[in-house]
Length: 199
Image 1 (cartoon, one colour):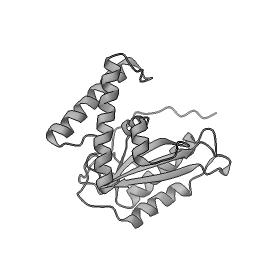
Image 2: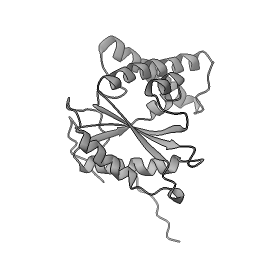
Image 3: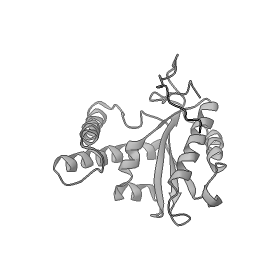
């Protein structure tokens, strides 16, 4: 747990289907409220992932342009909005001018964790629990991963939903890039000392 790090450098190596299914199983056996089991999964790989990368970067740049023009509200504080939109523009430029992927980091696999709103009104917590267990299983299986909130934002685009072919009842709560790490960390991330209240 202490040595686990977000991975943004991946080997040019596909992740075996059996391993992906194995780590998803950790999500499937995660607890859900009322045992409603509203969590589903989508895996994007290969050429479809390359197409999705381009579409996502165009979508995020469009969000940035619309925000700067005063046409949309990103529903976050102003400083974060300015920082994110600046990053989205940089991601777009890096990819289409230099071929550098700062969104998915050339990961071989993107895993989407979706909540079925027809099974429960608020499946978010169930999806988050599943994603944590999947991350732990991925790490235990020799894989690296990184949560990707920017794609969760891009998923709000009708064009991306149409591209993925997912039904409207599925809300995306977590996106994770997954692959074999091409970097090795020698220390964990510093954590602030937290108060523990014994009551």
